[in-house]
Amino acid sequence: MIEYRNLRVALLGAGSVGAQVADQLLTHSDELAARVGAGLELVGIAVRSMDAQRDVELPAELLTTDAESLILGADIVVELMGGLEPARTLILQALTSGADVITANKALLATHGPELFETAEQVGAQLYYEAAVGGAIPIIRPLRDSLAGDRVRRILGIVNGTTNFILDRMDTLGESMEQALATATELGYAEADPTADIGGYDAAQKAAILASLAFHTLVPVDAVYREGITGVTLEQVVAARRAGYTVKLLAICERLTDESTGTDGVSARVYPALIPLSHPLAAVHGANNAVFVEAEAAGPLMFYGAGAGGIQTASAVLGDVVSAARRHVAGGPGVAESTHADLPVLPIDAVTTRYQISLEVQDETGVLAEIAQLFEQQGVSVETVQQSPPPRPLPGEQPPSGAATLVIGTHQASEADLAATVAALTTSSVVHAVTSVLRVEGLS
Ligand code: NAP
Image (tube, rainbow, N blue to C red):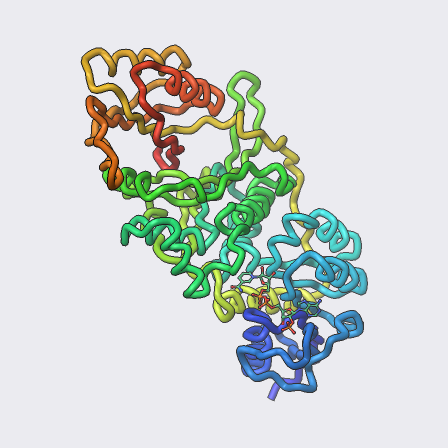
């Protein structure tokens, strides 16, 4: 029997993820000790209420409501409380006292990441956060370590399971946004207040974390352009499939080069976009997550799996616990976050992308030429034009007479040029309505 010295692990939170982490630390302690080369002793679990119902039964003597005392003397602190405070203060205290810290708290990292990483660097400790993006999916360590010798060009991520679940049901079952959201709430995929998910805020926090890592640049969450899925209609999703696309809420992180100056910048943005059905991200169904990374040397890589769930997320947290414990055994300072590139974070106006625009137009000769000219005048190049049957009228409505629906796909265009085109279309006498404008991503 090998004798190990024990490392003291303090756990903050015993909710969906924390209870599973505690359970694994207690039940697999021998195996974890063998992997680390030191014992991992769970010294206590801070909770808000001693009597709360837990997903797994935990030894009562480990529970405490005194988180501050618990972290004193800990070698490793695992923060799974969520929220900004007291999580921020407790993490700062833990780092300052020399502990390595593990967190799954994307909201905290996206808001106070620089302060936390700076403190860790100053004291030679390390902050781990594999579970903060993509739940069980290993994506932080691949970006930080495995791809550290490569140059990432672009990341397209489905990083919010709730919105993917909703859009997937609209696409595959023909449900409306309201029906799909109600099912998501019923099955526990959506919170009672779903704003963070459907408003794109959760995805924006993850985009900030991914962009910072991938481009060695501090990307604040406020600099992430964000649109949620609330404006996506079933008609758009149906039309997308007919045209060979599916609608996904994407977190996009991209390194952009200004051709005129040769300088690079970073774009981080979240919006619902069309992706071709042939793209690997189109096959991400239900509440799953996936992160598609394009690196200069490695080429395209896809990381896929469960983006949430107590036990699944606990897997990523425990991976970090093992890494932190191995570091303690080996000694030496933690590895600081790399922000050496310090690239400018570009506004959405600097981005060019393709668009798909649906129009209801007057069905007569010459209209197509007039519309094509209108695009040309604004500097937007048309790639495809499809004519489809006009939308079915609502009950009691007269079908529009003399109307046709055009679906126009553009080449790369800037946000400004596209906005000017849409403005011109809406005032054109041959256009009855601009019914949909969606960006297209994932085309080479
Ligand atoms: P949760 O179920 O709400 O659990 C939070 C835990 O923290 C509870 O045990 C709660 O105590 C405790 N707590 C909250 N405030 C506290 C305070 N002031 N003092 C002491 N204890 C406090 O949360 P979760 O779903 O496990 O999520 C934890 C973290 O993981 C969050 O940052 C979340 O964003 C992240 N995350 C979660 C998932 C997931 O699938 N759930 C996936 C990825 C990342 P009581 O039990 O006594 O109320």
